[in-house]
Length: 204
Length: 204
Image (cartoon, rainbow over all chains, first blue to last red; front, side, top):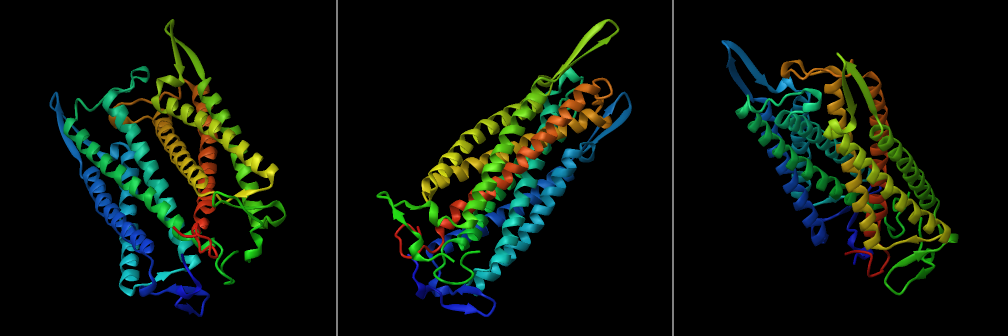
């Protein structure tokens, strides 16, 4: 239960700030979960981008050199870009998290909460769409699509394909973490719209 | 602003029910938006599934009959199934919406809000992933992927491809509507976790 006494300080700009000593257990847990997820995304996002982005394989067929690289498939380019952006975004958000943990404050600032919520939503959908598109290409590369005469290429470029596969798995974990994060930031935003005990910013 | 007097009735199971005469303008707007979006998803979901699912084209090449159909591409099968499920899901949710509109009540029931939120989230991500995978296949079919010797097929099956394109646009609108809906249901759920004026169900 929260009582009115919890609100230890109200800043001039209608932004109630909850101080460290009144931090709820649930707030701390949510914040730790957020921090862990942002670290996971940052690490695995870089890993996925590097795994796919540095992947090449050269094959000699009848004295003809053929080289497979990730830019041959547009979906893999999208995957590398999306995961790079997700990693950079998570790094910035993680630093914000650390800063608010060090200060020991929870900012009940609606514009900031909206910004974080929107960013997390967009990143969740973008990373998931990138994984879906890359997985679709990977399935065609692995199995071929006989009816359309798209031949499978993974029997030719085995090492290339398995490294792309590892990258896609890593990107899948990134996108699932982003989905969980977007739920957390939705929670952080929309609970501000609950009945807020007579503060003018409590309801819209 | 909401005051304590708004709560007109509290049902036995710790489920406060807001009655029609006290319905907030914002609640009504959110509900109308939800209703409209569910209708759009139901209609366009069926349209997308029918457009893609009934799409065939027969081509005679050197007295050899070749038939293009949506089952040739696994991504299109996924698209049809996902949009069919989304339409059926929205129909059920729309009926629940109508029922609660007729009764004029807003149920502040956490388990139900969690169920709706979870369902909307899953449907949003599934429909978006289906669109991404289908769009990836469509791009390959339209432009080919020369490096991998996947040839473009849309110059052969023009009518087939344009109908699939219409289906994908329709499915894209469905998935964007589902994304908006999942934000609305997140709002409906998580505002229940705001400070709730001394009711024991107000905070976890």
